[in-house]
Amino acid sequence: MLWLKALHLIFMVTWFAGLFYLPRLFVYHAMSQDSISNDRFKTMERKLYFGIMTPGMILTFIFGIWMLANDAWALYSGSGWLHLKLALLVLLLAYHIACGVWLLDFKHDRNRHSHVYFRWMNEVPVLFLAGIIILAVVKPF
Ligand code: HEM
Image 1 (cartoon, rainbow, N blue to C red):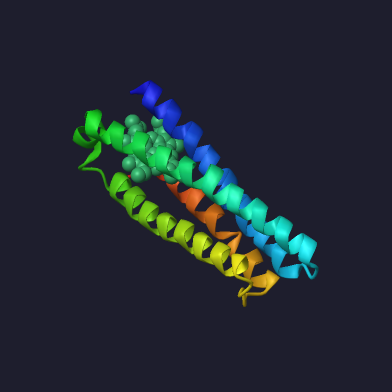
Image 2: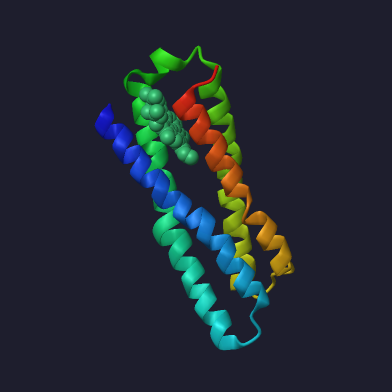
């Protein structure tokens, strides 16, 4: 169980590194004017999303579900924090998919959002991280 938890946390950090950095790339991409920058941002975004973030997310989920299947579900299925954590994870998955949609918009040169919009979107993962960590560690209810 502790090995699974360690791997769960390693891949969670990998996933969040991308959740924090990709919208920041979108901020700079939305401000860029020249085609060299445009092409470079497209490459950076694609590699981050498909090479780091998405594998990180899948492995976080695999090790989390593995812990549930082992004994965590039996231990915590009656606790509210686990259900709220899982609900937040569904919303976080939706945010991850939204990042993929923005990435495709940039890829096809059809992004219509301003850099200010992405600055706000960049704050969203902070809220998820704080909420999920507090629920998982403090287990307040
Ligand atoms: C499908 C996705 C996920 C599932 C099924 C899942 C499930 C679990 C389970 C069963 C545990 C062990 C609970 C315990 O023994 O205390 C755990 C631990 C933990 N999870 Fe997740 N988790 C998922 C995603 C995440 C994400 C995205 C984060 C962070 C944002 C996260 C943060 C943590 C932390 C910090 C712990 C350690 C808690 C502690 O030992 O104090 N989990 N997770």
